[in-house]
Image (tube, rainbow, N blue to C red):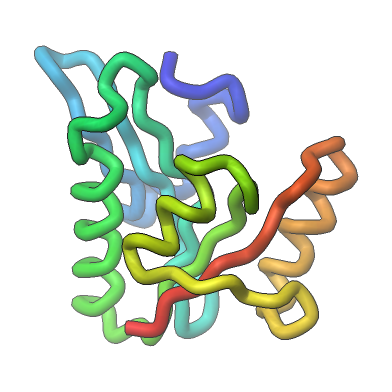
Length: 132
């Protein structure tokens, strides 16, 4: 299992809209990205790479695929929420081209996501956006 954040069923809407991409190795999922369209954005709900496969560029490949998909669909931005201080979270996304998106300026769905994360006890969360 890649993540303990959400059960597999939570990703069915992403799959049904064609916005769930999986990297597999011999039929075993080793990384995935789940996204949704929100207005003029492709919002990344989850990007996960199995711990023993981190550092191999799988996350970067998935992000590049999401960016290409957003451009192909005529979307203007990518967005996500993540941990601000963990090196493989916000700093990682910043190296890919995302920038901090102040909560007060973020889209309503992103503000709601941050509030939901805070209510679940997740601390040090932030929103990020990339203009395409």
